Image 1 (tube, one colour):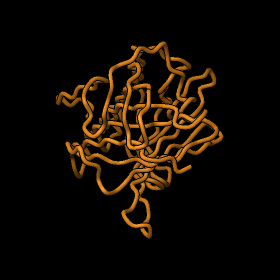
Image 2 (image 1 turned 135 degrees about the vertical axis):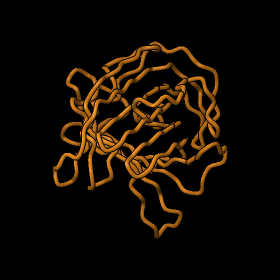
Image 3 (image 1 turned 120 degrees about the horizontal axis):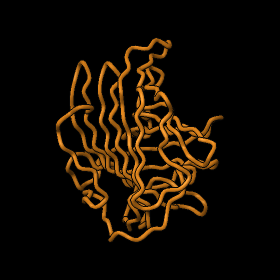
Length: 241
């Protein structure tokens, strides 16, 4: 949480239960998120490893990427156990092209059709090119906006992104030589606070198509009505589209 004294280290080398990692490999650089969010978007299905478990949960997670006029909309869904059930919306992120090869995040983390957290100004999540060890950080205001347009709160927030090189990672879909990206968000939107640290492994899964193959996510939430901490790991299982 913003201003929270609890210590949580975000590292590319820390083990992630349920995900088998190889040695760190050298890397000259990584293209921007435009490599990930292309004009031929992917829908990917993931196994979930919750808490400290090294065994996957019975339910799956799905990431759906869609193109928009500005860039892309990335939505995450919790899939039902039965084929007759309906997916449950988790969170979303709206991305836009920066015009110089960079990618910006303009809003996200809201409940679908209920509220949006607007990043003011939009946050640069990736420049055109990052070399191993490069790190960018941004200060911004997070505005909590309801579906009817009313702003309920705002607060100072901060995020950073670091490209940490490459790792060999084993997933249910197979092994990948993946780029490792570390991200941290500390968001204060007036009516609550959110801290989210994520390790993301990005790799080419089909010819010319690149996507997230694994994530390790640590979240601290502090809202008016509840507080909590959670750990979730995702490993790619299949490409749906």
